[in-house]
Length: 279
Length: 356
Image 1 (tube, chains in turn purple, blue):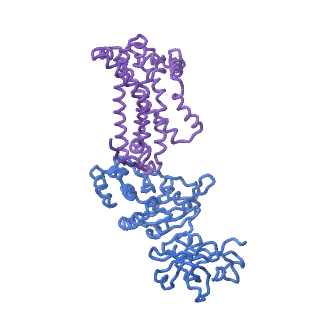
Image 2 (cartoon, rainbow over the protein chains, first blue to last red; image 1 turned 30 degrees about the horizontal axis):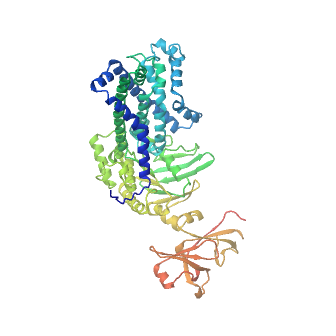
């Protein structure tokens, strides 16, 4: 083997890339490969039968649909929260800021039970909503609510630094040119923070896809109605249907990966539109 | 359109950033607001733009021609503003940046698309950025960005153009080019302009009139020639270019600075006096000639540049800087370590307001 003398300007490339690959292999690739290997041993017919039965399809629909809806709501509301926290100084701001991280820290089962208690038909909020004909607990809406709860910090924490970085001068420049507040928001501010919004959306969406603990309490887990994919996998495992569980997991994995790739591509496009780093 | 500011003040907490300032900018005039950082010049500019609210005061007024604009919204004042750090919209192309002010107009006033296009291209030609329409600001150099910012401000045909340290973030060569270009552009457009700078050279070279500010107040308002050659006080003298400062006292109607004695403005006996002399107002003689003057030795010769700079060490703590032509240096045969005497060709004496 011949060695080519190479010099790099930044030291540590070999070391960091090496540890990155080792780390990712042990923690991410190996378990995923095991999953794929197990799925491969199934054969096409069995795989399709396990991955595409009506109950499983319903679970996919709910999982992806609710995750998208929750990430969408978070992208909008999280942007508002991040704006308020990043732009204004008010009493209780520090407290509010700390509160944002709570869904990160709280055991998901705890948040699930708390939300269920709140939104159950006899719960504090559920009681108010029931006369309006809105049921939250034990419906797909409940799943969305739980996913919004756990996804919010992702959007807020991604956006806060992006908004703080926006120079106030740019808004002043827009105002001097005669733009209204709304025009400034739509033409200047939103395009500038769009990449960060998309990142927050992707993180929130990814988290929602895999969420289990908080959802199982509020959803009621009715097959074909409010059963999410991760619960279905667990159910299959409990019934010793390893093949079925693997098939669902592999499908989820592939779909999530493709979706996240798409969102990342979209975000890269938005960053390019943003003209990269500059003042 | 002319611009008249009277009795404007602005207080931030305990700090008085602008203190009862009045000034006028005539129609089509280019005026520089010059002062050290923190002197309130940017705050004053931002008040004129409407980005900052002046302190309420019965006599405070801000007029464009005869129109009082103090209460008017920022977008209604017909003011163009150029920021030090460009403040371009980074996700918009150069074309869209310049077109912004036209596109956000209410539809009744908005020009048709073709007209917007024509106007933007015309402005880009004016700022010498033809062919850059589709670039993003991130792909431009600092000087190019600032020219885009200027074109953007001019697109809405402002009646007053305000520039906040427009060349402050650029390197020396580009600054010098751009300020000469700005002067030519102003001669072409004749839009009433007020620009803020802390660079005396920039102010003296570009402006029709220079307003020197310090600690929120106007120290002097005059033509570049006036403020340079007839500075109103010690601050202006010191701020407009390099000066040598000597401390002395008033004795028998004369201000005495060691071996140098000059006529003093009327002042009480024994009062502290300051002598300010620009480097070109000093002359050097070899010590052996025996002329009266300050005794000093040559500490350093700086021969790069159009004029030679000679740094001298006298008895004072500060070095004395003298600028001479290269011929004079050669004739005198100056070398580091030579003993010389320094004489005055011109000077200014200021007697301090307080007595000790």
